[in-house]
Amino acid sequence: MPELPEVEVIVRGLRKNILGLKITEFEIINKKLRYDTPKEMEYIFKNKTIKHILRIGKYGIILLNGKKHIVFHLGMTGKFRFTKKNTDVHKHDHITIIFNNGIILKYNDVRKFGYFFIISNPINLYKFKNLGIEPFYLDSYSSYLWESLKKKNKDIKSLLLDQGFIAGIGNIYASEILFDSKIYPFKISKKINKNSFTKLLSSIEIILKKAISYGGTTIKDYQNISGELGYFQNNFKVYGREGLTCYKCKNLIIKVKNKGRSTFYCKICQK
DNA sequence: ATTGGAACCTGGTGGC
DNA sequence: TGCCACCAGGTTCCAA
Image (cartoon, rainbow, N blue to C red):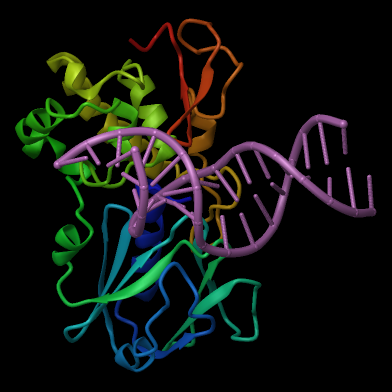
């Protein structure tokens, strides 16, 4: 579900609401997620103070005082919500975090693709999960990315989804980014020319930043920690627009399956 | 080493 | 109304 912009919006929301608070209770309601939530989190995180909250790729990191920190990934349907009463229980609630000011944070995940784990040094996440470059620092790594691109035989859409290349792009934004940079999604990565590559890097940054400014994308059930929906879907140029006319050339937007994921593009505008 | 496809899990939708 | 196939903001495992 959530790609980088949605995770970023959630992280900012958490930062605004729980920074400086102390965890009085970390309770595992149902440990079954993609990976079982370790039981020791319940006492490791008890009485810890929230020092900072970060995002790396699609991962959120809650830094605590001490040496152990919380990492979360939301999978497809993971979401946080604040509540005042612990009796406010939803189906598929997995974790409850109670803070010293009485605020309660619940983690809910219908499909259980999300998960939590403990990390001692956040920087290790890059190695541990083999994460690539952060989308907002692409300029600093453009020569590395260019060299890397030149070695890839797979199509550019798949490469954008590869978290080991650039971390944070998901299925929606991959299609939107490629439309913005006028690149055909099935173009073989190594055949992309320098101009297109440069445009691609800037499109990635532009689209993701714009999505964040719109509060992310809500197609079905994404909402931020305050229950608010995202609005970037109103800005889609290709995603979910199959059979509709391209805003630029008036031809029909096409949808095809690529590696099991829907891919949307305009065959006139994207070469 | 890469890559494609299946698997993980639940719920919603559309067709018959 | 019921049943079934297919779809979904992701990642990982396995076999070719």
